[in-house]
Image 1: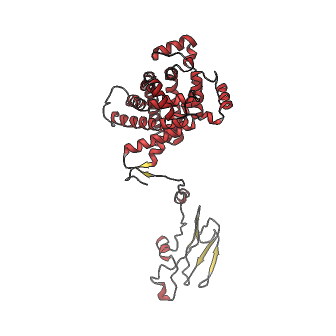
Image 2: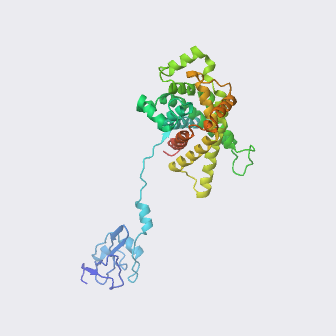
Image 3: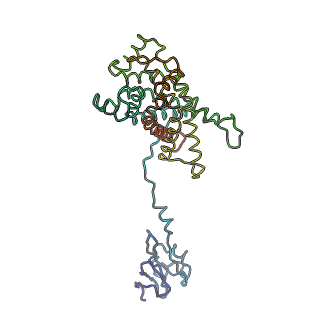
Length: 394
């Protein structure tokens, strides 16, 4: 090969191998020909050049030092050694693969405020999504528009149209947002205080999530119950009140302040087992998920399913108390029977309508409560990841 010549090689000469069956040699001095050649791997190609290792400075002999010659002198120290340089497929993929996605982070340094904001957003979003089912469920419980889901739906559509399905939703959001914020905040706080650290003995003889759930339900109910009663009145007696404030003032004037807490006892009796069961089931299912799948991080879809299953378990177990509470909240409107207490309400419903009356509306109730619980837990966990401390990675 002449000086400065270029020779194309195949895989049978000088032991040179190329993935593409092509090679090249470039010599700057006679008898000093080295395979730089094409070297390749998946997703990567390059061209190398070689110079004589016997000449410490190629420029002294009138030669020209080729680019990257130091690189090939290091990895090709002798004429006999020929190497194919490349990158493994997995390594190349890991270098080129970039995580795509929008990461929203908002700095909120106070952890209590982060929980409250996350809970409020979770409550507002979940209740708005299931507002039509909530309206149908309420009508079924009090029997004001029909005896089946389809009958109630048709009656609402004929009377008020689509707006009728969302009647009282604004009040519901105003009630649920602070209620859910207080509830989730109370659960996280109490559960964290009662949960033992790894290797520590349990602080109480019963599961901490069970107690924390009950505390969460009681605290949120006591603070937001009047709004719940007003929302029920606005849904049932749509022509009697002009809005939240009008309903509040008329109830105070005509029925007294105590009316705002009518049905509180059955509500507390109902919310304690419901909240305790709901949060206990949610916490237990999360632990089972981590243990079985050996994954610490739980995604949004998994959280949605876990929360929905927890909601189904708790709502089915405590539904009769919910029926009694709704009946007591309606009171003597439209000539309805006034119940003295929750036991009177339960016994009267059981006597007049049988066991079926205690579970009237369970289907639409589960249709509403199950996705509402899942959406609420999913939004809460997602918001907690978005709202971060100032020292956390943005």
